[in-house]
Length: 131
Image (tube, rainbow, N blue to C red; front, side, top):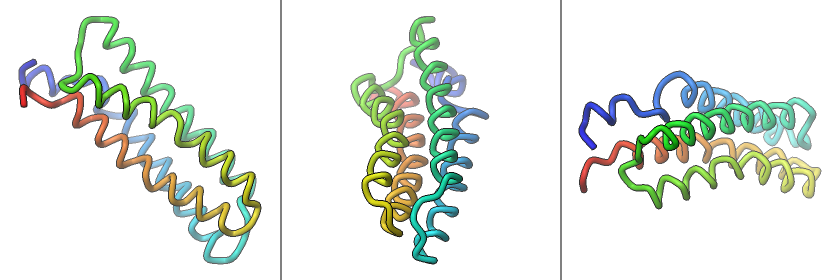
């Protein structure tokens, strides 16, 4: 893969940026709730659903690119990050439902802060050029 191919990465651009911004917005909302000692609310759960939809769309774009012949620089790491990425919002939802206190909001905040890091790592594993 050349650096020109990396520039056209399917996991770069508008969609991952939207996923990151949405995730950070939910994280801020959940942090405010946790500081105010409030349990997770419907807005946090709806936010997790919206983040999940954005991450699923990103996953579909990546899989379509793979089907079209594009390849990530580190396939094993890429698929690991991809699977992790789509599992994070449902994990936050389940754990927050199990902990209906302010700590549920803290869980949502923490996982929504991890999500942008995983998106960036997903981008980096696609763009790796020959070690």
